[in-house]
Image (tube, rainbow, N blue to C red; front, side, top):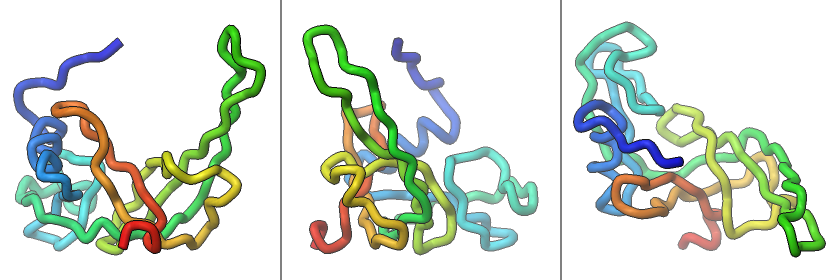
Length: 134
């Protein structure tokens, strides 16, 4: 069940920014902290002085969790995928996935590059191995 985003707010602003195909994150003008997931207040100092900046999209896999989904009716094999925590070069850590990489090929310390996937208003940040993204 999809729930539409509110007409305003940080999630809507994020969707507007990433529509250009690049990762954007917030930065606090008061303390200099880089922020992801989008917010109204800086989680570091409580300031309202947040601005959007285009991020490099580069990061390093911090951890990986392998998930196994039981087969759907008519399927014989379970589906495997992985969730990853990625430390962005700008500082924030975010949860995502590497949809085109087999879970067993994802390594801690792997360098990755962000990619914006999905449809307008429902964009998500996913990652590709940095070597493949060049």
